[in-house]
Image (cartoon, rainbow, N blue to C red; front, top):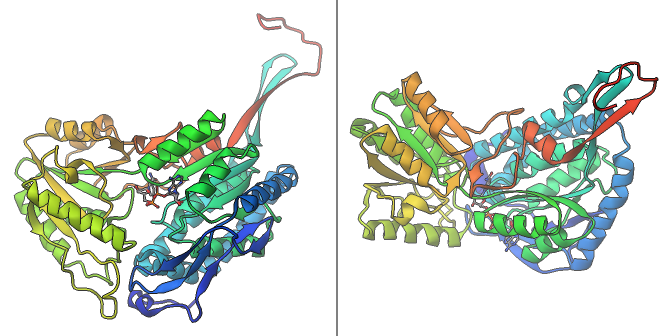
Length: 499
Ligand code: NAD
């Protein structure tokens, strides 16, 4: 396996420009819609082009998927799982090139990109494992009468994904949707189209029937065409809250099943009795990992009581985070402008900048990239923008509260509900936070509490529109129906109220 050091990726531009095509009916086809240049956030240099699908191509993708579905839905679970296991072997074989691709187009470090591919593989393992775990259920409910569940796919399903995890978020959806027998069309972020194409190439190599997995690139028009298409049964979406909400309303108004995950503003509650190393590593990793561009990133540090010594160490540790080695770049210059403006606004509103990432030490040769160093704002009040709006960058806002009740009130008032984390040595405090926080995913002494499979991923409030979760057991329920069959094959010897 060709292992790269993280710094290698900064100069690892493709020999020839990349070209992201659509995968329609199992064939790679150049998009006939609008095209867009893709840059690498490391240096600002162009990586290549993504060509969006035309409306005709979107319709062809749905038609091709619908044809493939007819056969795929009748393919036994064990055969579907077997194909997914072949796919898994290829993902492991190509782990380094997938990670390098994701890092290059998204700006994260190779180690972070590797981790996202591995998390995608974990979801795939869960999905392939349905052959062993999803045996439905059956029971003799009366003498001679039997009830059973049959799991059924929905049809042509669609997943729309964001820029920050070019491999992982598509892999939250693809394996489960396909494993239960759907055909799946991915509309990746038009900022990171190349890694999803690699996922598609490996699908074909694994021998998945043509049309079971498709890719259409593009922006809003392509998403809306997919959501509106009468041949599409269900839509999974991951992205910012406003768009998640609009996609959810559009899809459900058309009678479709939808689960749309949105943005986040995650609270990290720090108590004075927290283990210093666990807390400092957890907090710094949480807000600087993936340059803060994670829906599970810590965003507001709620310091309960006198935590000054711990806070000081958080600031010191964050100051040592090295750009290029420990932390990557922001996705683009627009994100950089938005974040530097947000930091300036926080200052104007009275926050103290304890660590300023606005003039960072950029890796050599990367001066044209979108780099922002870790930034810590202290004395943040609930009404300030940095306290309640998703910033999506390596910025930690510190709110000071007197007690746990005040901490929980801050968390409760947040519009979002993805993650809430507590750093404490007290089991009672941990339990109190777990039971009282409104977020969907709780961490105790862990900065990024992403549930591992088969536990499902999903938040609450404006972090999720729809019922259920996107991965794990929740994902299986979302991407399928459970049909209920009641059969009577013998003369029923006992009569009951239902006979
Ligand atoms: P985004 O909302 O801008 O884009 C997400 C997807 O929607 C992309 O595929 C994009 O092309 C498409 N899109 C853009 N405009 C659209 C429109 N008007 N109508 C329909 N589709 C449209 O999100 P992003 O900037 O790519 O990703 C960052 C956001 O995603 C953050 O808010 C982050 O918190 C969120 N996110 C959430 C989760 C989660 O699990 N809750 C996970 C990852 C990212």
